[in-house]
Image (cartoon, rainbow, N blue to C red; front, top):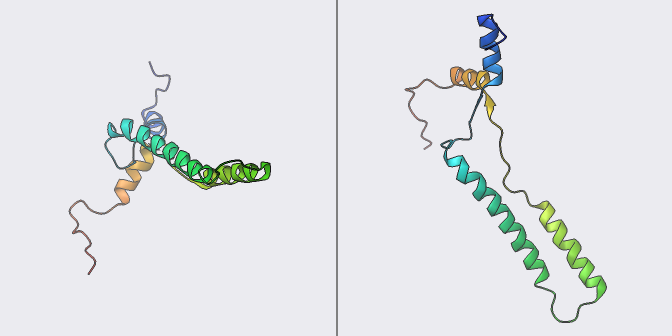
Length: 111
């Protein structure tokens, strides 16, 4: 049972605390999309490191190996991959809908 008894306060708390997914895809699709995004990022990182390390062949000097290691680390750190986006509060979602275009507006077609 809720400790808040005032209806206006309940409504304001609801608008502030309830969250909505605004990523732009079906909420059920996020279950697989998040996994695939992380997988894609890790694959790209491994591919970048492999490309740097594949240049080393045969017997390698210590300074060449440290340079290759440094290059591999910097190439991975510069990549920006998948990042999860948090859900947005219900109040913000409703305000955005109210401020948006009318439902039956004609689509903009560039010429």
